[in-house]
Structure formats: C-alpha cells, structure tokens
Length: 117
Ligand SMILES: [Zn+2]
Image (cartoon, rainbow, N blue to C red):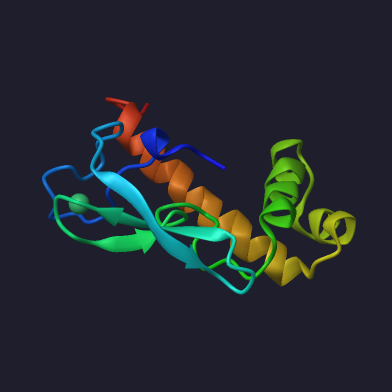
C-alpha cells in the first residue's frame, strides 16, 4: 500500500493535480468488495477518488496480485496465450490488462521523453 505522499490529486482541474506530497490528501473511506481500497479526499478541490485511479488496477476485477503477475510475465517475454495459461486467466483477460498497461506506458513515455526517435 502506497503512502499518501506517493499519491496525487486525480482531478485535472485541481491546482494540485499530479503533484505529490503537498499534504492535501487524506483517506476518507474504504471501497471495493472487500473494502481494501482506500478512497482519497483532496482538501483543495474537495474531490474523492479511488487510490487506484490513474493506474492499471483502476476498476480491475482481478486481484492486484494477479494483474501484477500478468504484467510480470509479459515483461519477461511471455506471449498473451502463454501468460494466460501461467496466470490461469483467459487470453482475453490477459490481453485486456496488457493493453491497459501499454496505454499507461505510452503516456509515461510521452511525458518523460522529449523527442522519440
Ligand atoms: Zn484536488
């Protein structure tokens, strides 16, 4: 579980959007089927959001460990079908999380790399 200092406001219209460690976030509840996901409150814009918002785990039906296992297998070079078999999910499920992670990776790449060759 990440500390609040590692999270940032997810409201794109908030002045603290995307800024970590500003002291504007607090935990205001628990959400999810097992109540294990923290609901975060921003004191600047008064928004509430899941601590998973902006990640591959946002609205994930699988347990976080399984999603991470899927991405670990892909990172090590496994294909979609092989990953699905090893993690015991369908290839479509594995593919869905792989595509989600790919979108996040592309956004990060575009943010961090000034000029892509
Ligand atoms: Zn905010």
